[in-house]
Image (cartoon, rainbow, N blue to C red; front, side, top):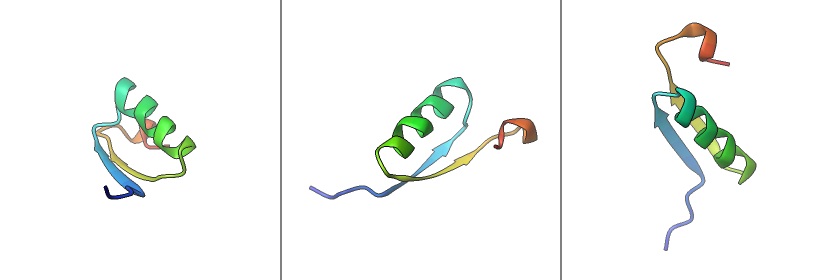
Length: 41
């Protein structure tokens, strides 16, 4: 089994943002997209 170290999340809305936070806590590098500049942080 491969050890995943980075992930791309397309659409960082409510669910995507929570998933990104969980991945970061696991030590993963997270990339994401969003349509709203205010949510890009």
